[in-house]
Length: 177
Image 1 (cartoon, rainbow, N blue to C red):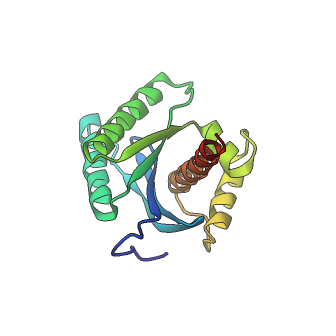
Image 2 (cartoon, rainbow, N blue to C red; image 1 turned 60 degrees about the vertical axis):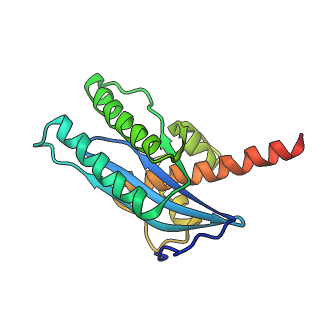
């Protein structure tokens, strides 16, 4: 993994990708410079099921604040919720997602949101790609030795890559007008 640059090149975009959850929040910091994307750091925040929901959300916020302060991302890409069959699960993930969005806003990090379908489309060209296909694309695009674990971490990297690709497409469209 590449070490953090002391001073970011003015042409470098630093993106924080986040896969929200209550038990595990995946995160990834990627730099994009002149079309080259590099992984600065990635990992996950884990909370204990023995703690209350409020304690778990506090832990996520506290850890996310440290990540933001350390890596100073300019933009963030957060996975948007998709349909859950379990209402209890969607409520807890919604609470975590809200806490994450509020934290990003407090630190003035621009927020962009992507559905799982958009992430899959951006990485594989197919919106119904399997999780393993996404993980392999993450590994190959960033030239990593292995697929990042747990899955939430690989998902966070994929979300950040989706944002970088989507951003490029928006710039191309804007230049065509």
